[in-house]
Image 1 (cartoon, one colour):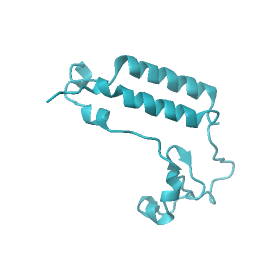
Image 2 (cartoon, helix red, strand yellow; image 1 turned 60 degrees about the vertical axis):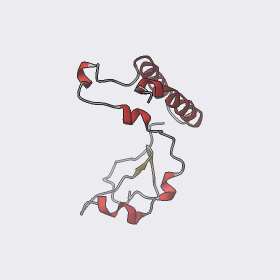
Image 3 (tube, one colour; image 1 turned 120 degrees about the vertical axis):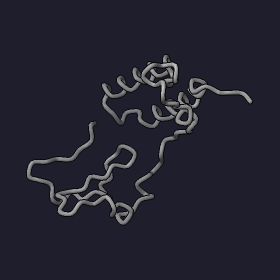
Image 4 (cartoon, helix red, strand yellow; image 1 turned 180 degrees about the horizontal axis):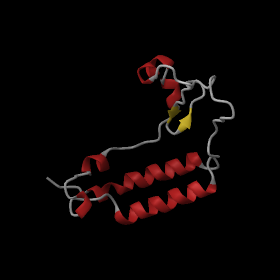
Amino acid sequence: MQVVTATEYLGSYLESFADFERHAAGREPGWMQSLRRNAFARFCEVGFPTTHDEDWRFTNVSEIARTPFRLARDGAAALSPSDLRQWRVAGEACLLVFVNGHLSRELSTLDNLPRGVTVAGLA
């Protein structure tokens, strides 16, 4: 049986990152794009931590490395207000629902926002 290290899974992450960049183009501030690219470049240099790294000596992340992450598509369409019921808080002033990092106005309750509070994206 051949053992595959976590670093060998970087190829799938490269593909996912390229796919993400294509879909995110023009939808975020330039500083965020630059920060994300630099962080991913660093990840490509060092890879996943291993049990040979002192801070990670008791943590094996190979299962995470093998997990195929993909961009979610239209996640809000798969949710309904009843799906969120268990996370509601009695007496809440508002409910902000983010699906895959994006505010879902359809699932959020913004009617009782305090005066002067605005909800908007970073862009």
